[in-house]
Length: 280
Image (cartoon, rainbow, N blue to C red; front, side, top):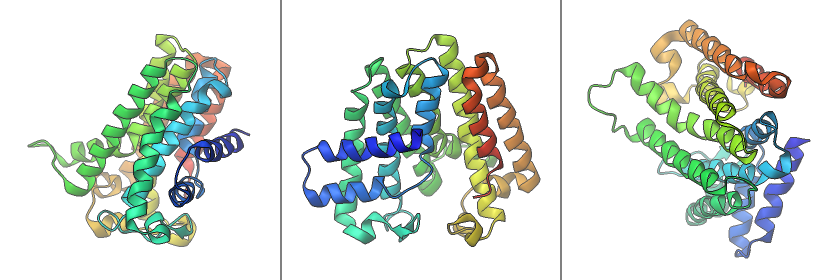
């Protein structure tokens, strides 16, 4: 149900804006190409756990997915990852050309705070969270691809800096925006923030493990690319067993953060269990 609400809301938001039709088509291609919709689902589930409702949190859910889609369009460009396929479809720059892909990514990023502005509660706070997380995500991509780490930072610390920012920032932000959209109290906001931090890092470690241990056929995407590119990954730095231990530690940390929320946190508990044990 939540997934269907997200899908229809994303399409409706893009349909209502006066865009050139070729730009709209490129944005729709980027946004509606499938995927888990993890970030908007985290927004909505966090809002529900904090006593809010789906309608109140949907603008923030649209906003975070637009930022995520922007990041994927730009990451796929030849100047960065140079990927030609995503989720079984041609990437935006392959389908529409590099110039349009850049502009579509720019457009989605610009539309994100506009979407967030429709929130019922905490509009300024939600917009600030969204854009701060976007900056962190971009910084994480820089660390991952262009380096620029602080002097003297150990390899394990560099790896955590990449993951907490490149992947973790938007996942943590999703939980915080959902809480803010629900008008959560300080304790609930802090608990959902901890849940988001733990889940965000865990999600990327699981991704690293999938890349290192699964076939491309099973994973549904190219695997082994990070090792070939010489990128920092948890299995490379901590080993397979060490990565699994860290996944378990973060899973427990996320569940502990939810414990005081009782039944209202049940769906978030189920989500972290799924994310901890996924193999694709």
